[in-house]
Image (cartoon, rainbow over all chains, first blue to last red; front, side, top):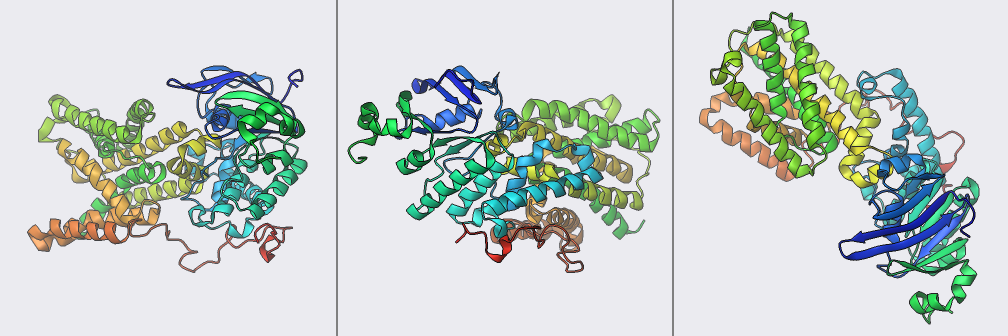
Length: 259
Length: 302
């Protein structure tokens, strides 16, 4: 698996918090148009991996090669601009803003006007803002939030908040999308809907996705390749079929309940 | 000049200065206890330029803004990376340092005795035009991506950064905008009162400005203007109540903070749309061409 030059190549990534090693020697490859899953029990370091990939934390050692360039050590806004978008396990929306404005933030860094032009109301500001609104509405329509566009995100129900976050991440047209437990807090019906939705996005947009998930059905049904983490280490990887049968994985995580 | 016009000009200039606090606190959520020091900086720079160096008045106004923005850059660059509460402390230190410099450099500023003999060049018209221009600038900034991005940074800096927004850069720019606005107001103030003294620009003044912004509502430009204008005129209006006016002033603020925590105006903005004089144009209410989403066809919603 590791021979191909991928969109993203993670080489022996490590992160320690004080004396605790959250991620140790993590290696992974994500090719173009690939859906990769990371599973593992609580505290396995899954979210830490996403935080390292998106530049939220600096890593202690290792490389994150995105499109042939080592991005480890870059600030999160720099990584975001390269085309890596993400969602958060415990939804992080801009609650003081409405749904539409939340999604519009995805385009801000692309704006071709500065503070001075904004101050004097330069006409390019308006042109840009209109184009952005059009695009943002397009994404809201895609996730079925068009009619909620003027509502403040803090007042939306949980399931819809998740979708706003997804629209916000997608709006920047990322090459790589990092999803941190997108099914957390959803009921079984919503989970099935989410699986279909992610599959549809993936087919339509041709991006690559790294998915962290607790719920087996999500990962097993969607992912092409799965990494299994336990206590910061990778204890197994493979296709969903292989993972299902891997005795080490079953012992560490899946347990008796899963087939 | 009649009493009312004097109060009016004074209020307009103060409101312009408070706009500096409004952009900083309203947009980025940062508290500056040195905002009035920028006003002082503007006042002294402009006064010195005209009185001591015989610089023409319009140029002195520009100079006041340039110096304040320059000083603001140094202060902002070094302090905006630290935590929000430490930033408030740092600006407190900055403000008091500016005041100390004004107090101690007696040869230039007249020290604690104040700087007298400034010609009265700020006309009521100039004050009014400046205020309107200031409001217009702030309104434009809030309506642009800067307003949005700053709000995003204020709400969740981490998420904003992941969206590609450079939080530090935004804070710095807004800090400089605020410094420039307050400094310009300070220059106008010096040439209106014809006398400035360091005591006018202490941290207490900055704190009062923050109160004014929260009184009107930090998410509403209308609120900030009304808050600044009414609270700066209030002590004058309440003059008949002599020693009771401070108590009344305090009571009004307490009532607002208690019963309208988001400020008097919340998020409400005065505009042609909210007054019902104009149908909302592009934006709200507009259909997305080619999509049937509004008819409930969004599917996934149900």
